[in-house]
Image (tube, rainbow, N blue to C red; front, side, top):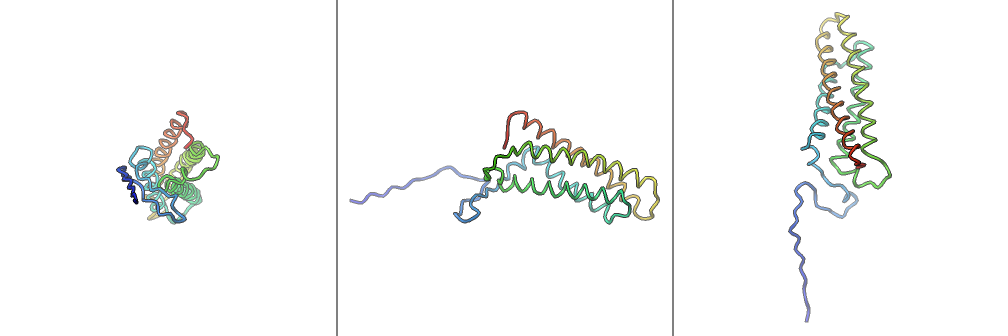
Length: 168
């Protein structure tokens, strides 16, 4: 007599894609991170970075070149960290890396550079009367200061997470 056994799994995963068994089966879509405060801060950093680039491009002064350099480098790093959270890359890789400390150092450097670059941007454009570009470049510098606050908040949340002993 042949016996058939059926296992029923009642556990539903609402935030991850089903494993396909292909080469990318390790990817797990993690939307929940972006529903919490650190994820929302990362989205704010991303959006403010885009707006800063829009307001100050193209660079008309050397100060704006430095400002754009800082904004673009922080923007790229934010995209990479957001992708790491969104795709679950940190959990999938088994490298001996303290991810929280690495992200804290990255975000801390971006925070300091954002403050310096924003102050330089505002100071340089408040002394010049470059017709048609004065307001947008001052606005970009002020938005850079606001993004500095967003990066400072991100650094603070990472510090708290590192202090609690988390490495992932």
